[in-house]
Image (cartoon, rainbow, N blue to C red; front, side, top):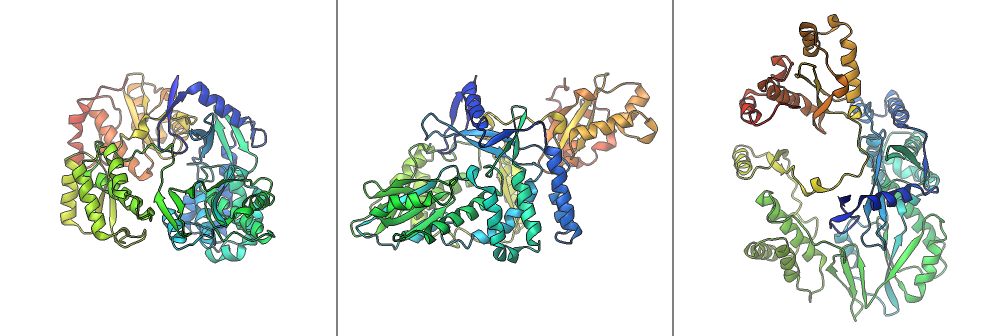
Amino acid sequence: MQITVTPDKGGKTVIMSRDSYLSKMDSLIADAHTYKRLDGDVTSRYQYRNNEFVKKLRDRGLVDDWTKSHLITYKAQPPRIYGLPKIHKENVPLRPIVSCVESPTHNLSRFCNDILKNITEKSPYKLKNSYDFVNHIKDLVVDDDDVLVSFDVVSLFTNIPRGLALKLVEERWDDISAFTDIPRKLFVDMVSLIMDSGFFKYRGDFYKQIDGMPMGNCLSPVIADITLDHIMDSALKTYASPLPKVILKYVDDLFLITHKDNVLPLLTHFNTINHKIQFTHELEKDSELPFLDTLVRRNRDGSLTTNWYQKPMASGRILSFSSLHPMKQKINTAGGLIHRVKSLTTDPLTDTNKIITDLLVKNKYPRHIIGKLLEKHNSKGVSERGDSSFNTIVETKYCSMTYIKGLSENISKTIRNRSDDITICFRTHNSVGNFFTNMKDKIPVLDRSNVIYRVPCECGMFYLGRTSRKLGTRINEHKRTTKDFSKTSSSLVAHMRDKHHNFSFENVKIVDTTNRSHQLNYMEAFHINSHQRMGVCVNHRSEGNELNQLYSALIPNSATRQRAPP
């Protein structure tokens, strides 16, 4: 059987054997130096530890009630691991990604990240993005005996020494304390708890990462930043030979300008600082070196110029002009590409218009639209990222709406004519991502939350309900109410009492899901109305009143096209 997945880089589509994928994942998980197998599910254990820690923060007045309610969870899911093919590597190994959304410490990780990221902004090496990189090097002049070189950390996240990371948090407390009222020991305990919760589920079994941080945990990038800054500081302070003239960092990629005889000694020294953090290097070739999405060129006079660069494995795909998206979104996509290519290209000999046109034509954009967009951009001049023409701050409210060609444009126009502070943002549900195979472990039905569910009755009808908690918790409550009809007046109990029927709780099905708990009321009302019109719903008619009558009137048109649920 074949699976369709996205690669680690390049934006292409990878079709590979499921057996090959599982074999590569099995080999990754079998690495006893990185992972160890657990005896069972530890989700509830870490959920308890997370909640107790958050309660401690609230009891000491360190967070308010809203923050406490946001950080506490009673419906945590185990993190789930999957792999992305590295199509630029020999034998196409997999990069392990751990999906931590809804995990026990996910919100606590985000809370901690919001504090720690403030101190990484002060790093003398850090680059914000490719635009920042171009600005850093555009006025540099390189000596004849100097070379351009990049250093890359081997599997940085997985190899972060947790003990070192915790020590660095303590050492940098003077910087961190400016952004939080949490005492040092309690803050370090929080980081330690998040690091320790690095477990995941794979093919029904549970594993724990022995050291390092998983790629997928939102705290991992900032911990990597702090750790790598320390490694670089230590290496440069203890290096005897002349230091690099330039050293810049983006995540785990370093750009250096140094004497040609200094490259290998410097690399060797960097690799002695910590045995787990190891670097590889790439030297300039024919006076050129790729870095991020630029190609840096050293000119004969020592000046540096850049060109926008795509790696050889890049697909060249952007939002296709033939896709079912709003025209404005397609125009913005093309405009963003034009801005990026022209802003990252400082070589005056490069024909950026041809590069842009070729790529947009490949993605089915009409030439006359491309021409107008290029003319518009060129008339403004190439602006820097952060220019007001690209980052106008407007106090406005945003509303998301599913895009329906023709109708959505009219709705947006109507709202725009009547309100200055509301902007409609369109979304599509049938995206390319729907065609990719989900290789994460499936969440059992009874463990899912924020769902609309139906419970079948032996008579062929259904009870429809909603829950923001785990479905299993809600079903157990239903079971308890059926033992004493006097304790509740729900439509489920009323049907059992009046009709002497039994519901099959073990055959509960999920009808709909949402990531937003506040939508559950309206979603439930919609499905109750729809099922009532099909005559298969035992719910009281009043339970569908949450739905505005204007929408309710539309349901018969769609319901008549539906078949009764099996």
